[in-house]
Amino acid sequence: MSTFLPKEVINSLADAKRETKRRETKHCVKFNGKVYPLNRFWDSGFSLDVEYAPNMRGLVDVFEGQNHTKRCLVVASEQSDVEVTYEYKLMTEASAQAPVDFVKTVTSPVALLEQSTADPRKLL
Image (cartoon, rainbow, N blue to C red; front, side, top):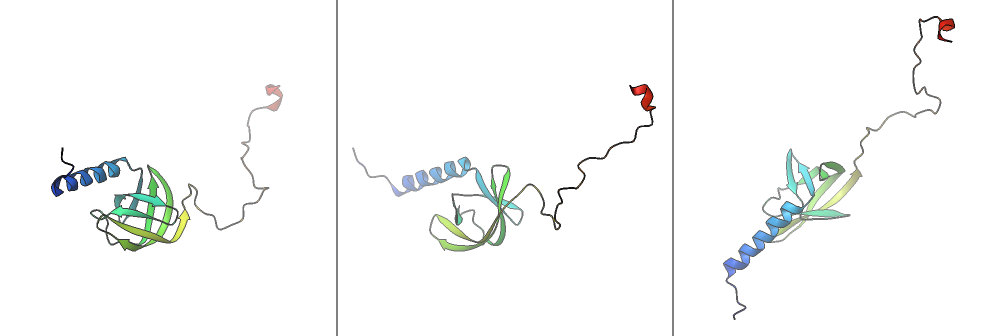
């Protein structure tokens, strides 16, 4: 039995492997209104498949599934035949609440009491 595979078969297997990995990934990045699946993801950057990678430079949003996790300022750092690597220049964790520009005091009211028009003697 021969262990030699034609170049077309090897390329097809590599394409199928990349496509399967792209479908299984749960991390994606949103740039200019388009969503791109991530190949790899680490603390200081991420990589995209070279077929899907735009010339990305600037502000991007990183999602894990449907959850917005990070907002990053990125720059392309390295490109190979298979993927493009992007590094963070700045990374901020996304939060569900908008930031406030004032100090919240501890003595602020937590609820408003409604004035009753009923006779208090009848309530007892």
